Length: 226
Image (cartoon, rainbow, N blue to C red):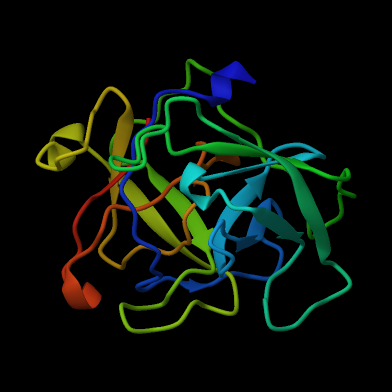
């Protein structure tokens, strides 16, 4: 379990500006989290399945109670592919810092083991030696907002992001090239917090995006995990 808890740092936006609707179940590892916070109001995050009984997400998605929905595409239309499982244990990174969002990562132990189907399968995690060069195109997906003043998407959406040179993100206050990689896209950020950055069938832990300018019109790089 230790290799999952690298020193990571992030900043957050939860928008889907641009992108396209995903083909149903083309990202069978994706999880939708329904969370009751410690203040007893509801919120949601994304996550991804890494084994039969563990889901990974962002540490800031921690709550009093979390229910994970797997095998879903349209959150307004429950299907037979859905599996709704409560979380029995939330394991945040021990060095998570809420202000900077460094180490913003959390494992969730499910109360019961999942049943793998065409609509729900885990995704691989990278090895320690994995390196992705600048210019590589990766994919992110989620049910986040479709714009600054828009609600969350009912259906899973996705967009491609290109890895950029670390120098592009160095002007950001909480960016550290030793802990993070820099990604960007002209079309926007498609996910809710906690979803993975995916390349060649491997999830590079979870990704939460650097904040975008007001109105979501001017694209800029995003800081992601290292």
